[in-house]
Length: 431
Ligand code: ACO
Image (cartoon, rainbow, N blue to C red; front, side):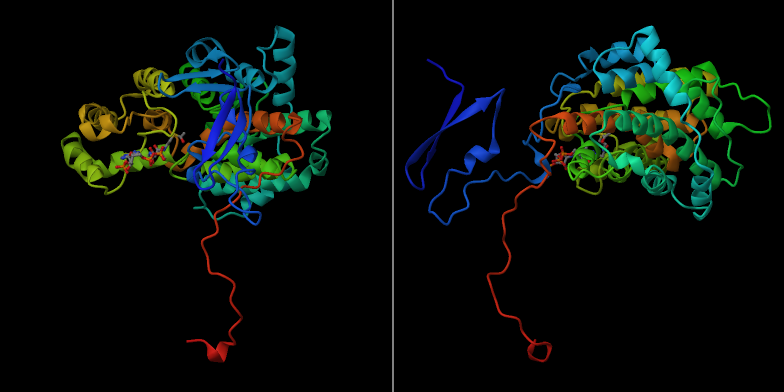
């Protein structure tokens, strides 16, 4: 009869071990008993880049990379993008269920009423150079919030966690917008509580001298959908960093700053910025074949293509393509779109990309939309960070409340390959 165990025979010693299989996984610590001698520390699994390691159990997001499926708390991303708002989705991701009318009103009220920044935070932002990258400003400013809300250290106090959650979700757009206004030398625009989450963000970005800023509903909706699509993506690098830093029981502001720093990287959230730079560099549709050839010979990557998990079309990229056309209908077709479409067409027919299962990811088209909305390239990963904040917080809280994880600091092992013990050599004697 089949049993939920795995039998391992160690051919070095001839010994046989039986380890339990829990929900498709073996516990890596069960390998430790496999050793050649008493001095041997035991077998470890070696997994650079975490290609096949699950550091946690999670109930938040489900991805099937082969089938191109993404669900938050069981709800397909396509349905949420079409029917829900970002704040409703954020509530779902955090609390596990769609909110009732009262719950949504309460949640929105809390988020709306925490969007103002302490005036000293403004001074902090003032201190950055005019050409500082807004992502650098965001990372440091959100980390600095830790010094304003010292009670955030009480991470096991549910009330305090809720408060920091409201503040983080509410203040990320304000910090982002202030960073943008600072970089273009414009006075800061304060939050407007009458507007939606994304409507208010557009207000803080683009308000000029008018008494009341009215966001265009198409742009407000487009941004809302983009935020929904970026809200969570299970154990990506920034979320892993959030969990990793959070496992040391750091406060949520420092943990979010660390997660955002990971998101800044061009292989993660910085990719949409790189896509635009790549499209600009290619310059015209006729140069696409030559560019693809360069990528195939290893001279750079096709940014916005490929994904560690999706080996099929990223379901978010499909939704984004539709949003892109809504925005282009309003703002005019982005001239870089033709280059992007040609890149996609050629890549999807090319053996190099087919063999490696490289498809457009979420970042391939998002940058084109942001650019058409009037946002500079530097702001793209900042927008991603705003949307992803709720995902980071949900994972952080899930980890803190998980009896298996809450008192366990993330501490991987290593395979030491360095020098054997040797004695100190005085500087005069060194060659
Ligand atoms: N262009 C060209 N070749 C690529 C690309 C790409 N975008 N992505 C992967 N490959 C190739 C690799 O060179 C490798 O080829 P090889 O087997 O001949 O060596 C093969 O495909 C597998 O690549 P890996 O790097 O092992 O794949 P991995 O899963 O580690 O990388 C990643 C995933 C980092 C996203 C990668 O596809 C990439 O760098 N893409 C471009 C950056 C990007 O768009 N990032 C955004 C991801 S989505 C997000 O974070 C929100």
